[in-house]
Image 1 (cartoon, rainbow, N blue to C red):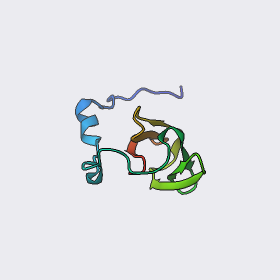
Image 2: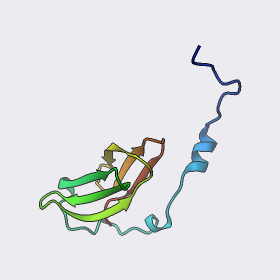
Image 3: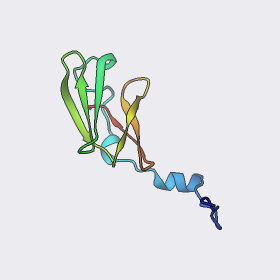
Image 4: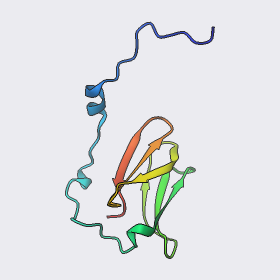
Length: 103
């Protein structure tokens, strides 16, 4: 048999999840509104797998206005918050990350 259950099941509860939550100081004192000039309904994200970055492009002119580093192997799909302020993505090694989108 290839699959053998663990003798001791792994523990991952609410306390573990809260302990893994990282809040970066630079995101605490954000301005009230995003400061980029691009139309927030036409922002494009490019996931750069080769060097683990995501570029944020103004979709009207397809020019980058922000770029940030990601963890290893970001997934291709990213998700914006409804106000367009933050973007979330998963990495293939299980991390969920969010950042501001070009403040």
